[in-house]
Image 1 (cartoon, one colour):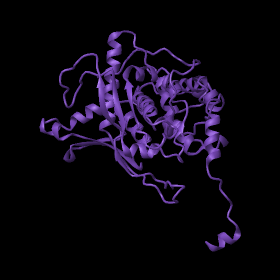
Image 2: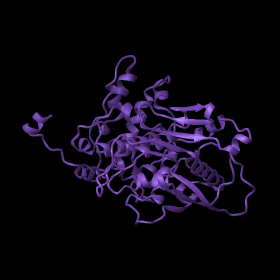
Image 3: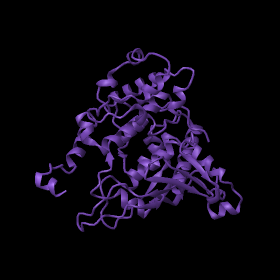
Image 4: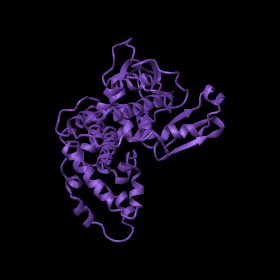
Length: 384
């Protein structure tokens, strides 16, 4: 199934259609990364002896696993079918995950005993991620893509444990952070007509809406009241037109920086956080293709054009401050590079970017919420 190719209408400067934050917990980051890498297959590998396909970023605490069901094995469906399913995903789908997650598990904890579930309208998802179908055929194609992704997430098990301890303030004990579960499972569906029996694996007719229920493990981790795992403006990033490279790069740059800023907000506000362009651009793969492929092409300077264009888009959205590298033009960036093989040094160079007017308050609030570090006294140091 091909991705929608129409260029959505830009919505910068308008009030966002929906409000959904960027979820930055380690489990969400693992899923977002697996989805963004789907089309190019980065970090994905088939495990034939287990009838599985796994996404594992080197050094990451979590992995994402897809497995053939018993029914699919009985039908003789090969493991390669899982590769076809992952290849249908790209970074555009990450915004579906963020929007649907917001509907299912709000950033504020739900009341005790509340069942986290929602009926999700596929056309609402299309609007929320910045797609604008121009005709009935395009809308049908977009619905199919949304439906495939919803099914994909219901099959994708996130496996791992957080690299830091999470303590319950009431009991003083460390909370369980291990997960081996998909984020959600599917419930009932609403359709325009009674469909034929859906194949166990394939393109069945998408419903108009579907009931999605959060799994217990995902709900427990994403609803921890003492863990601030969210930063705003997911809907702003999702509204950026992503059919062209600069827009696609802007979307994943915003997602990556949200993760960096949320984890180290003090450094982000003080200006001490200076990730490299590689860390930013390779955290999530743009939907238009891998950045490395552009840099290895006969015209690698297109990467500078896309980078400069992406930063300007994020400045216009007030996601980035209009300073440092974000205030530079393509020509200024190009003139600063000379000699053969500049690509690696440029990619490994520090990106001078900072939170913009729409992000400063949220990042500052996150920084102020962190425990204050206290200097050790001489007596404490001697005891050690």
